[in-house]
Length: 69
Image (tube, rainbow, N blue to C red; front, top):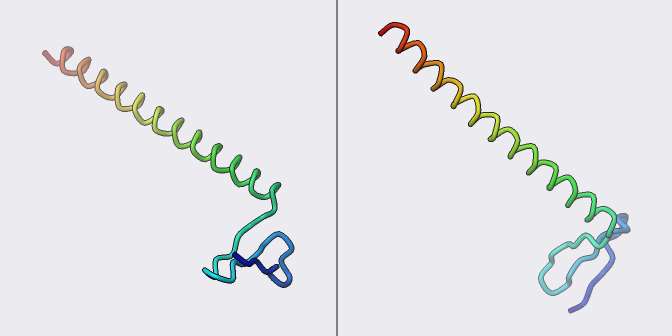
């Protein structure tokens, strides 16, 4: 495999065999991993809140049904 530096982009190299451009800037890679983990955590929190709201809605529906008898 042969790699060439990408002109004007210091943190990137290009594989001359496949044409793939790779990011070799470790700090950028780590920051991207952190952002991905944060997005995943936010999505998990959103899903948990949706489930809790759904549970509350079901409970309220049961209460209303019992009150209306």
